[in-house]
Length: 97
Image (cartoon, rainbow, N blue to C red):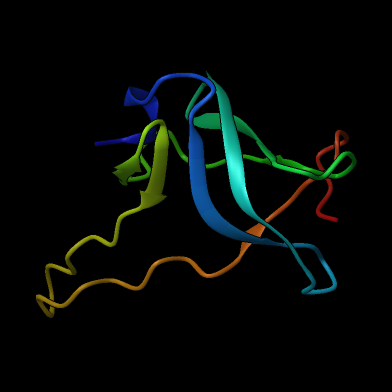
């Protein structure tokens, strides 16, 4: 399923890092779709916690209202594509933290 198909308030398991490459969280909350991207926040982080995933991000349900980014097949090599390891987090002004 795609990100735009999950309920608002759902959690997505994904590692998040700041601009200094410091891990700041493992779970984000999906709030709503905003055009072609989503408005999500990193759980447990008060400032500089915005994440904007594409609404077409493939997800796999792994629990009650809990999802993870699903690796998609690479049509060229027929191998699984790697999951993104680092999701950039932005502050309210839109700049990467």
